[in-house]
Image 1: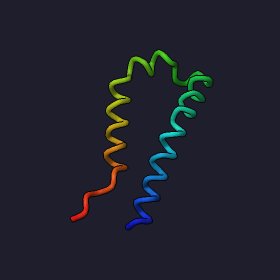
Image 2: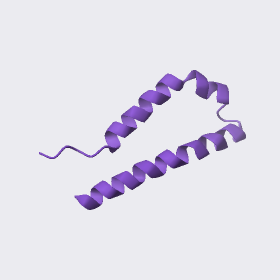
Image 3: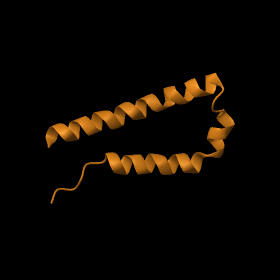
Image 4: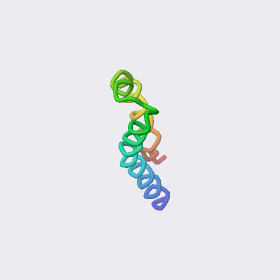
Amino acid sequence: MYLSFVLRLLLAFGIAFLLPVVLVGLNLAGIVKGKQLVKSWRITVFLVCLFAAMAAPERMR
């Protein structure tokens, strides 16, 4: 149980730290523009909250 918690935590933080790098790469490649990211900030906040809820440890019974 501890190992699965640590692995999920490492995965969540790894994705969180790589996301800005991926977004900058997509911006430099011309796939996603900065203005598009600013326009869709509400969706981004929702997706971040959804991911955080999925990555959070389950409550023990």
